[in-house]
Image (cartoon, rainbow, N blue to C red):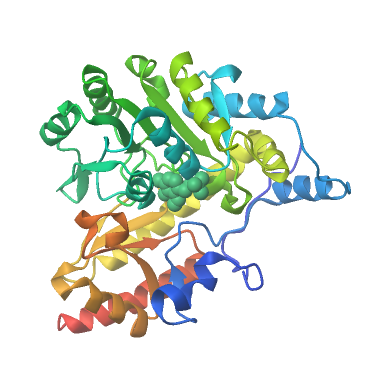
Length: 396
Ligand SMILES: Cc1ncc(COP(=O)(O)O)c(C=O)c1O
């Protein structure tokens, strides 16, 4: 019997010399080059060795010219979507794309005209706003409600936004970043129904869908029959395998008309392929070996997020969202004053760089997001510094 690999997520791996954004951009964003970085949503945990080896094997051949979109890429995606997410996908529905954000931008170009509006549920991953505005479309924001430290959709407000004739597309973050909500089937079904009723195309960004904590389960929009005619789903190996720098993602579009509109937008900017190493990584990651890595990773991240929430709750007055999915913990620091004061205190007193809430839209102001995909010892000592600083402030 083959020996089972046990992945080591505890041993820190230095990223020095790799130009990692999370480290290199610290001076620029935080004014302090040595602050410990828990902001950018990539992991300080290693990509599995089997995957690195596959890429190394490819690198041993000395030519890196143009490549085909070979069958194995599509077979791997189909296997993963069926095995991990219970979604039966056909090769013809898949459009490779350099990144999920590229797909968002292309969907905006394909399904809306300048001056029209794109609905979103904020706070949400910043480029949902950025891509909309950069493409000269308007944001139809529908802020989420916080109930029992969980995000909930305000369906009344959403219906009002979707009913506006200028709203042509909705961007849905499923699971949700920054709040870590794994939307339920019923909730997604209602979103789909409302979009269908009002002739709005739905883009479901499912990049975080592999990192979901039991008993929660990822619900792909692909499994909602009413979504067939109106939805695009985007996924990537970037978050799950820490390969965002390889730029390998894909969109799944069941409806032929939507697919053709999307691929025409891709062709306009020549963004209908992924790079050679991305193909190797994608094909090998979305496999039984990759599923085992993911299983162990999710168990590790679950414990990390639970411990972080437990510790942060020692701070009187801090509101903490326990994520159902994602390696991100979203917390409300507003009792400690304006966000600029908290930001400085986090950087200079606690020596941690977190993502500031305004990156996720106006509804995020005063909140901060901590990335828990780090070796546990480093993560918890950073969180302990936050706890020490903010407990002192409240006189604990
Ligand atoms: C919801 C969401 N979508 C997309 C991305 C970025 O994906 P990509 O690098 O494939 O553009 C992120 C990264 O943090 C994200 O959180």
